[in-house]
Image (cartoon, rainbow, N blue to C red):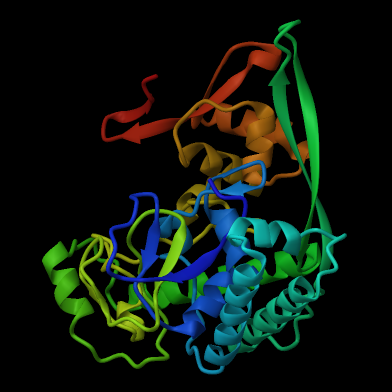
Length: 364
């Protein structure tokens, strides 16, 4: 889990922890997209969260993300943003987390931090323009986020709901929802094009075939990536190094097709989101057709880990309006997609796994 969605360039001659997601590219244009608020918003909807912390899963956040058709115009701002941040961290002897704690602190007036915010706004606008959405006002500013969690008192044994509040320098809630709506629409369009091209005919591609495709070339330096590999936090190949090869999979060059170290299912593009204003994480169109948007979001949050969750945890993870909870969970229980155990504050919910023999609960 990470408090912020942060990317950086790293040297290729190292072995990284299995929790580190490595995107094999030296493109500052790609860096600009991944570090933008637009991509972070997509990741927070697609990936599992705890309070405001994010677990970045490439198959959910990267593979499904609809990149713009070209990275033209993004290299400059990506490089300036990264270089200023690097110099700022060196000058303050601080890492990424400490730097972004200050970045999101309304009381922080340091000139270097203020410039980083200005560059972040400029980078977000450049990414927005890469999609051709010049009509969209991102309305950058201070947004207060509130999360709830249940805590058990060690002395009394009673459980109480605790509300946490923190500030973020980000785009407005209205802009965030509109960005997600447009990305969702683009995701559907890309998926339809892939279906028309025969990329979803059920055929699986071997890892060797994926590697051959990644090394075949044909794409240009401004072609967006098609898939990702690796596992967690977020790193890019250092621009001063040569092409990164073979980390978590096949060859990956600085060109678009090889931007991401391939996953074993690189030739199998992901299914589209459910067509709802609040995207249902991981839902297919067939599921969305039977469930309401709130129920789809809750089910998707449960399916992320398969564990037992409380009401408060699911409201936070799914992002639904708390007033929609009662109807959403009743809908899921009636449909046999969720099971429940415990009573009152001890009530917990878990997704039911569908198998070839029917729907059966997961084992504890």
